[in-house]
Figure (tube, one colour):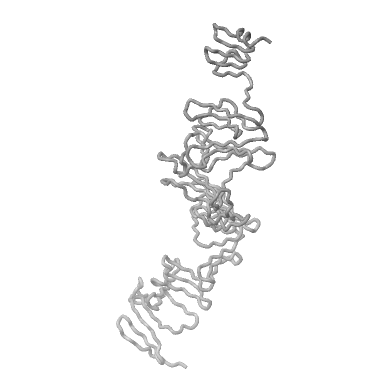
Length: 476
């Protein structure tokens, strides 16, 4: 081993002002004021080409690096066995915290809101956002959409503006999108919901030139009944926004029992439509078929025939309008048709067995626009009543044969009257004043009335007012 003085003399070069110990073990460049360890070309004030160690296992020392900005630094704090950074950090490359199956928490705080942070929780293997934080993808500032700022917002100018949930599994299970609700006031609560609570809503919001508060449609879910443990009746609602509006209205409601209401939230049957139902358009139709409980029975709107076909019985409650021919049965094979009224026991029946139309007692046939004439049977007698004008009985070729007055009990017989049997309780009135032709004997007209007395017969001329008595001869 040589002396230190000799070694220094050997290494010192007055021309370069450099000092090199043991061939690059330590190199001092006195001109540049740099020190190299493991190199004779230091690139910085201290350039170490190899492992640098401060302290030994279980005995450490603080290491602190200051920046150009006052108060900013990076510190290895031996008392905390950790690092502290005050200031910005830029990483080019991979940052790994921990190793596989042995991790460490990583927490990033924000500058404004309380509970504004992002935490990698190594104990649960979860990435957690604080209650005041949002996740924004594609934008740098939160947006108000449909009246609220979302916890997750995705925005883009192309087809990447979407959220995908994909499942790969060798079974029939699917991926899921879950919207939930409880009545709890705090996080992680399972407080039971109540009837009519909204559970989830999917808005289809739009920009309307002023903001993003309007929507064109909406899907809602609502509690539909009294809930309990493992008993949660629900309702699905489809909504659209009408022209001139900015928020949607309920259109279709699917209830907890499967009933579907269109334009009603209280359907009374499996399908309850409160409005007009149309199948097809003018000159382009489609068959509609309704089956009954009896095999082979149905009602069919047959678009090829532009008519209906009924196989089985039919009961009509309410109004019905038919434009076209109504056929019941076929020639030689008929079916009963019964028409009921509002009064109990009143009906009209086409009886296919009797080939006749029958009416129950008290059920009338009305004739005339104002129902002036009525024909009926009251279980004892049969009646023909006439409300306006005279009742006239005529033949098609001979004209009116009998006229029954409306305001009086006068009956006019146009030609001869033949009575077979006894005529009782009646005067005989002979009147041709209103006839088109006079009598055939002397061509005159008259108005006579024959009436009976207790012992005599009387006759009166209503034209002259004169009265006469018949001279009767007793024959037996």
